[in-house]
Image (cartoon, rainbow, N blue to C red; front, side, top):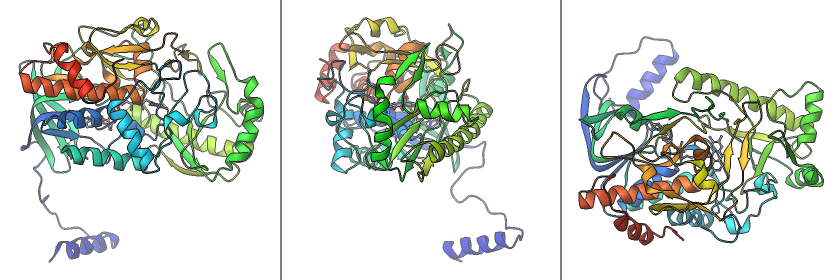
Length: 486
Ligand SMILES: Cc1cc2nc3c(=O)[nH]c(=O)nc-3n(C[C@H](O)[C@H](O)[C@H](O)COP(=O)(O)OP(=O)(O)OC[C@H]3O[C@@H](n4cnc5c(N)ncnc54)[C@H](O)[C@@H]3O)c2cc1C
């Protein structure tokens, strides 16, 4: 019996409620046995924006890279989470693009495929920024489906071996040195051995399980930023929506850290009618690349622990409930959105904050505020400090625009304490909670990933460890890959 015929027979039997024959998995081990499956120079765990850039950067230096992700596509929050646009890649003056390298290449490829509007053309205070002015100049609206393809191609061209549906379970350790990971795949448990590993899981899961010190959220306040389920809508009459919002722009304000911005007057109407119980007082709605498509960042779920399955499950259900309430709101209260259609919700909850892995140096928010450019700089950025829910109230947040032109992220933040052979990339790097609130957004996360990939390649080439790698070697390698360092 051929495979198609066999599957057809099984399908029919299931439909008829018959007992199915028991079959052994064709390729897999029984759970408990670990199959020796992969050998690489570098294992990158997590295929979000930082992981993709880490993998591509290292592979372009000739490193044999294995990139694993527990989902079905690359891009992490930017694709599965539907999060967007890319926050600013410019300095605070709005004059100079300072995040370049693989981020810029990704944007250029997206633009060439009609999947993004170039940030040079997008200004603050417009429909592309939910009409927010502060810190939102030159964002990049993009289409998440096209981003998936762009990342696929970048990895394939660089020779990165990608595995989807592969969850990191535990590190393979020899003393304090990480030597790969056990993955749970559809085949069972599989070992991926590697000389070095990059943790780009967002949650710092690899570093945590390997024994690096981690803190959860902000230990001072005991809080973690709220999570949000993103969603996209279309069939919006964009001209009418703009005509509804723009006359109200002078009324946009913040009172006691609560934003009264886009559509706050309509939220007040819905609230008065008992048809609004969300914690925000306005609606963050961002125009996307196609004229009638908008991205909505408005759900808010407090106290989510992204390292706890039950907490995440409850959050996903509550997120969908809030999306339903918002769709009803759009249909009933918002001109231009009467027949808007829900295109889809993120296939994963949007987690802003969970673990911060600690290295010898923990980036303090003060350095960002003071515009410190460290000696071992790997990334220049000017993203605002954006800590949702920082004040503990239902809607209050800390939002602080950068006063200096830019600040720098040091290489030291990528090196965890107590584990050898491991580098950090993206949201989980060694930074305090409010500093992470600035550099967690996708352009710096991608630049940090690129630097981690290059650093890993240099360690493999020279025999240095992440802790002993000489910045004098790292800097020219960053510049060679078009990273902007001032
Ligand atoms: C609600 C919300 C709104 C945001 N808004 C914006 C915005 O407008 N603009 C912007 O630029 N940024 C925004 N951000 C920030 C940004 O999206 C993330 O901080 C950024 O994607 C972090 O990149 P990362 O690579 O570190 O992690 P992620 O994007 O989270 O990627 C991590 C990847 O690792 C995978 N993974 C995790 N654990 C495992 C495991 N055990 N095994 C295998 N794979 C694993 C995940 O599935 C995921 O694909 C927002 C974030 C959130 C949550």
